[in-house]
Picture (spheres, rainbow, N blue to C red):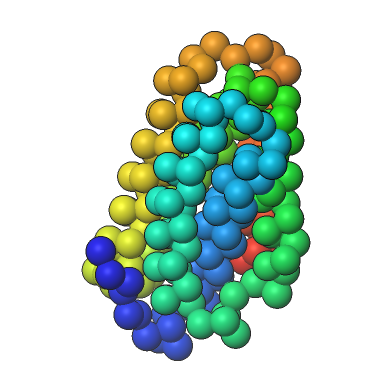
Length: 179
């Protein structure tokens, strides 16, 4: 799938803000998987992270093709750092923590993309843009399922950390829409 080529100036501001948030989300996702490498030596976690990083990197390249640098978040260095922490800390704590955080965050991202798709259908039904959002959503859903399958019953502490990561993801999206 190639990147869509919507006329950004013709899109409603709300859609442009959502595209910025998606670009930030994919930036954080790539950084999350980057953060794993220095935090664990578990071969399964490293394999999982490398595989999922390739998909997230593809998503990021697509959003970079759609959103020129001047339309991106001014806080990209912070988002990269936060993604590395979001991946590195749970990987360091152990596989149950890492998989719980990935499962929780990716399930939340699936819902976030669903809301963006609904909004885009109403406000800017560009077929290429909808295809991009739907493809990314499907990949995120698969990532959540992969992680949940690898540890279907994480301890309550891992679930709590995942809850914090999901909460912070929501805060991040709200900030990314505006900055």
